[in-house]
Amino acid sequence: MLKQFIIKNISKYKLLSVFLVLSIFVMGINLINAEEPSNTIVVDNSPYPEFIYIDNEILPEVSKIYINEDIPSFLFYFIEGIYLDGQDSGGVAIKTPLWYIVKLVKILNLFSEELENIHPENGFLFINSKYKGAPEEDDKGKKYIIQDYDDLIVYLNDTILCAKFHSNNTAYFNMAISKDKISYEEDEDERTIVELINGLKSINGIKVKKSNAKIEGDIVVIDMVLDANASDIVKLTNLNLNYVPIKVKVKGDWIKENDEEDKYIRNSDYMIIYTPPLNKDATLTMINDRENISINLKEKVREYNHQGWYVEEYQYNYKEHVIKKQYICIKELEYGTVCIITNKLENLKDVEIYEEKS
Image (tube, rainbow, N blue to C red; front, side, top):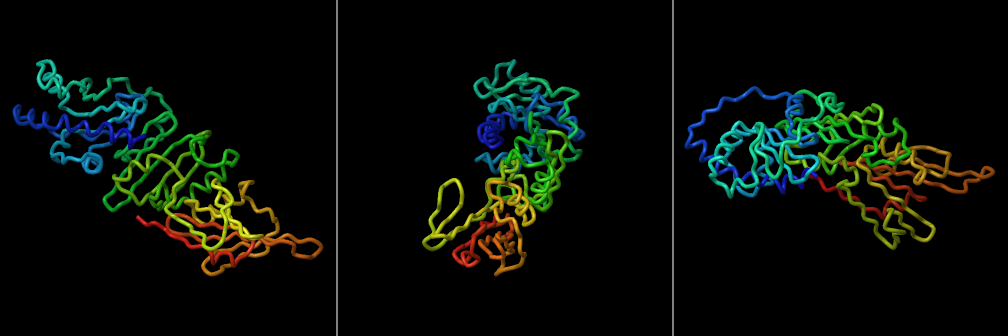
């Protein structure tokens, strides 16, 4: 959603750039920096009930990525931040003290073609949009906004996110999201959801340095430290756990059983392969929690290391005879884990693993 907003709309800022340069030159404006707004003020002053806010601290970096032409850096001095309408993918509001100048210019019917879709109102320059009003004063989402996490604020009906980016490629995130928006199995209990989120190693290919989760009613609150910068905001506004930069290649005459599951068969042998963005412990929690991929041999015999794999060995006994064996094999990598469930350890030699590091 954010990517669509930025690509379609923030580039329209170029229409305003030339006019701002001219107005500053002609009128000799000398503005004094106002006190930086707190996160609560960002929410209270929003022109939209639902929005995505990009602060002027990260606008220069964001513009380098999504706008093909260079924008003079001093122009960002006159922009406090940009709001993207969370209910309309075409709506943009630029918070700037120059809004009244644009209003006067429109009254004088100057730059009428360039300013046709720009509407100055209440301290904003609206592009293809209009003032809709801030979130309700007692809106429950405000309590999840963390002070100083003000570079990026996502304030939507089912997702609240605020972030602070540091120059050392470290980003601090706090997110409150409805449980039904997280892509896990519906029947997983709260303890399991927390354990899985706490065990995250990456999101959309971005490394997770630390992740702590708690559940408040129907809301999952997640506090994260990520190996990220402002250029990653499109990836990080979507808690998508499906993409992991890990590829597993199966060599030999193995046959993939179907496209929906990475299950391979060769005669009576089999391998089921998973690549979750989780650490070893969280992966084991996931495997043992879900009925559709759970171990059907209930007796765990032992656990050990085998050629770089952590292995849990299970077996089924009948009248003191071992009937079947099954192995959970885990290899933890930088961005996630490879988990293979198989009936023979020697099957692992037919597996090659590639990790696409950023």
